[in-house]
Length: 332
Image (cartoon, rainbow, N blue to C red; front, top):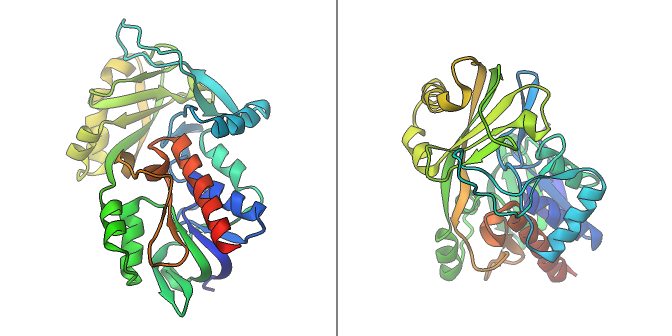
């Protein structure tokens, strides 16, 4: 049976921005429903089971700069949810590149943080939105399979090109200034491989290297990270390399990456299994100037996400908090 939703605020996307906005709205007594096309919450806070182990295959870690986010982190550290993983990464050479700034990870994988934040929230997964329209002073959201939602307000947190496509499908006209600002936001893709290895690998402490200019810009060992019982690597291709390989089959991509991984895996170990994940909008390269955008001329339509708060885990959280507060003020 097609799902029918009636709520004050419909939040599209159950990633960090959406989850934190919902928590703010609920605290203000405003009913918010989150919908997500995926099978679980988290978005790019993604962890996958593979070969009897776990691999973070979206965000790998996060840093903290803002006092409000630091307060949130302090609670996660006290609860044993978060831990400090490193204070910088080697580039795989003898050069020391660590900068002393803390990088944090989540016990059980990065997705565990999203699940923690989702506790107590009204979340509907496997709800793939097809169009967002404004009809008779009510927001009308239609989904694949006949799902339907009506809301007083809508918060869009997917990558901006996807949000614009939903509005275009619902024939929602944005102001020229808003459209121009949103279309100026740019992203880069990332191909990510999750690799089960029998044997050992050559990675410096604490089990990861970061090489922005290399074809594989990030390689980490999820076992040494502390989230997997078996050796599972996460390898992320640079934006340039991802674009070069994007249209190839998973098998062809896996073959190419296997060659790039030879210096890490060596001849005494073997790859048991490899899965490929495509992140089309992995990294924001051109952000919006504020932590959210409230559309002009469209009542209670807001955009948020890491394209607004900054291209980091922290940015997505802060954007969601700010958007939630703005909607709460507008709906009181």
